[in-house]
Structure formats: C-alpha cells, structure tokens
Length: 317
Image (cartoon, rainbow, N blue to C red; front, side, top):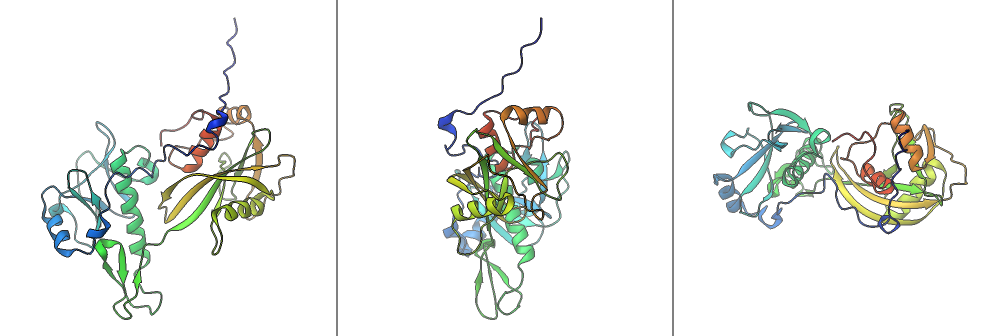
C-alpha cells in the first residue's frame, strides 16, 4: 500500500483580499498616553511609582527569559542605567513603562535578543514594547544634531521629540514607508524573487520604499515595473506593521499581473525571479531549494495567506 500524496493547501477566494489578522510587530497593547509626554510632573510621579517598569535596550537588543514563556526582562527604575527616558505607555492597571538605552543588567537565566529573534515569540504587550523601544533607540542614536544648523539637539516630550537649542526647531522620529506586495497572475501563481546579496535559498516577494509625492498604490506599481518589468492591476491594501530594522513601516498589498509576459529583473535589485504554484513552492521548500521564512515579517504572512496554511518546515521565529 502506498502513501497518498499530501494535498497542497489552497487559499479560500474570499480570503485573498481580507485584512491580515496577525502581524508579529503590530501587537502593542499599551496606551501610549501621548498627552502626558509633556507633563513633567506626571512623568516624575510615574518614574517614582513602584509599579513602573523599565525596558533597557542596547543596540537593538534586550534581555529575554524563556521560562515558562518568552518574556522581556523589565526592571524597576532604580535598576535602570542612567540615560534619557522614553515613555512607552501605560497598561490597563495604570502602570507606566519606560525605555532607556544603556548597558543591559545582569539577570540570571536571561539572554540578549533582538526583534528578529523574539519579535514573533513574545506576547502582545512585550512585542509592542520592544518594537517601540528599538525604534526610539535607533532614532536617538542617529539623529542627535539639528539638520538645519548642526547644533546638538536635546530630548523632549518623553523621548518622542528632539529640540534644537539654537533655532528652536522640533524634530520627530523618522519612519520610512515601504510597500511590500504579493503579486499573483491569472493562474494564481505567486511571484518570488531573490536579491543580489541574498543566500541562494532565499526568496521573497517584492518590496520598495515610497518616493516623495507618490501614493502607496503608485509605489506598488512602480516598484514591480522597475524590479521585474511587469505592469500590475487590482492593487489592494491588506495591513501594515512597523519594521524598526532600522526605521521602516511596511505596508502590505496584493496585486495582479499577466503571467504570460516575460520577467525582466533589474540586475541591481533582483538576481532572479520566477512564478510558483503552491505545489511548486512546496516542492522547492521540501527539496531545500528555498528556505521558508519565519512568521516575523509581513512577507511571510502574505505568502501564507496565498498558500492557505503555514509553509512547510517553517521556523517558529
């Protein structure tokens, strides 16, 4: 008796354009209490509150424990290193959470980890805390001087603004919008490509930054045309998540293209590109020709939406 072949999943037609329900880095649960960021009395009281907890970050990494489940190590203010404080939010019980950049404290049983390693494993609150703190740490480290006059700026608004002491200008955290699109054809094949610097077994969907004066839909069409030479239609938005690696916001779309047209990869952007059916993608992953992405990225979530299930041999992060 021979084993029956495994059935290849197929996404339900009505789900193709439904909003994405889960994105690893878009799960924050705290109230960011933006109105309190300029209230020095409130901030001082929150810092002195014994319920307050601080997330220490150092070059994009924090301490994490894994028993009984993955969780951030949060310390009371008295154990936080010296440095500028960033208000990250307040939970439903009124406890405040701050971020500080500095040396990670010594905590038995904890290890250093970044968003790529644990962003999909942490609970909703902790994933949002780490995403927020990593984004602020990078911005403060790379935007210390006024772009108008070059003077060193100072931190204001509980870490969400930098102010120039010379000309009074205010500067806000930078976020670079980028579109990422799952392109399919009339046969419901998916277009996957490899960048010039990627390993031989890595494939993903197309993506690119939004240019000044451009709508998101225009950016989707332009990037696909530039990267593989295809015109697209039926561009639809599905969801977004922050990607502070270092400072992007990824906006996910689907689009349709004519699979009969030749693919013309731009060699500076794309090393190779090809159409895949679900069965072909599964066979390539099973053969080790393509490594399935982890669930952290919006690319993985879009591919799984099209595939109709988790991809074979998919890692947990």
